[in-house]
Length: 210
Image 1 (tube, rainbow, N blue to C red):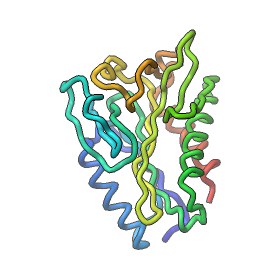
Image 2 (image 1 turned 90 degrees about the horizontal axis):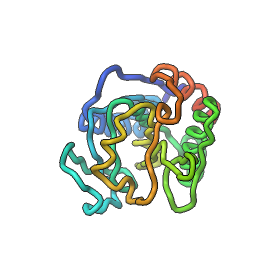
Image 3 (image 1 turned 60 degrees about the vertical axis):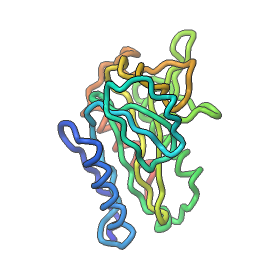
Image 4 (image 1 turned 60 degrees about the horizontal axis):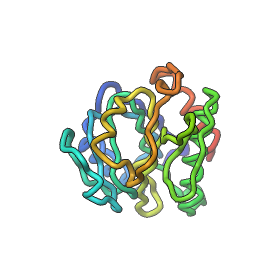
């Protein structure tokens, strides 16, 4: 297996089922040593996805397709303007077989990326994802949902850059009510996807240095 992590960015919108299928195959190839580790950046058409802890009562609308997926977590939204990063790392090869530490590194990656825009991303006990204080409220700006097979990770994180936030009205995001959803643009940061991708890669390679 190659030591270098492949960094891939797919243009346009990648259908969700296609992404899951490609991830599954890549994970198998990493397990068997046929492929290198991969971070794959995509955007999806509007979809709702349900993790292994999902409660169907959290789906409030049928406006978009719902896909059941093997990742951890509950129901979330993916759509244009949101950067989804699928992270496929071999934790065993890295000598880092610690799921909590891996999740903490993903959170640190997102917090560090937001910090480049002077946004203070925070982690909240009992609430998955990355949060920001927004006036008198706390809003979620990034979500996490992972799966691990034979110590190879897949699925990953989703960072809101400029999605249509009204699409979140069709779900109770990650089963958490009483809080809002925000994005870089909603916070006044008019960054584009390409700029954010550069920062994501820089921060990722620092935090996940082999």
